Amino acid sequence: MTRWLAILPLVVLLALAALFVGYGLKHNPHFNPDALVGRKAPQLSLARLEGGPARPLRSAYDGPVLINVFGSWCAPCVEEAPALMAMKQQGVPIVGIAYKDTPEKTKVFLERYGDPFQAVFQDPDGRAGIEFGISGVPETFAVGADGTVLAKHVGPLTPDAAEKLSERIGR
Image (cartoon, rainbow, N blue to C red; front, side):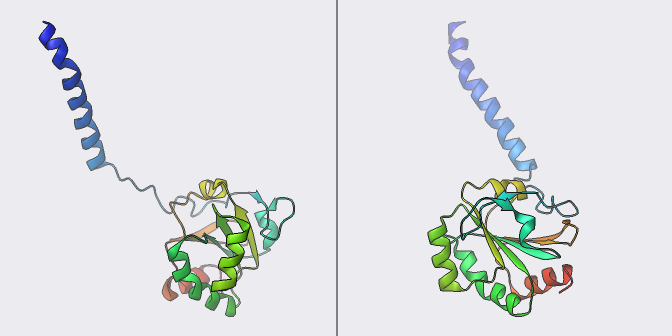
């Protein structure tokens, strides 16, 4: 009897391991990347990069816009910088959210790779990223004039992806 009691924890651990493996094989670890599409963009108040009190994200635009979540520490964000700058040259309105970054590092990043944004907001603790449901950076959201998320792109923008997002906001 004591021998069974000694083996019981091992049996329970093996059973739990089998359950976790079974769940992991059937469960998609990635949440729906388009979960926000068709819904209103989160109503957030964040500090602007240039400082001052927190302001609503919506205060930075009055029509359709792209919202790009980026970080100075993010290599794919460097990769997408030329596509964002090309979009700016075409008159596409873009608002940036500096995700888990410091203002100093964000400013250096924008000086080095170009500043395509009409406004940059700070998200030092990642709260805005959680509200937008990002899985990493960069991620870009096409937001309509009424505040509805029209499309989402995960990863660095390519020229094709940039064109598709621009079309979604009518640019």
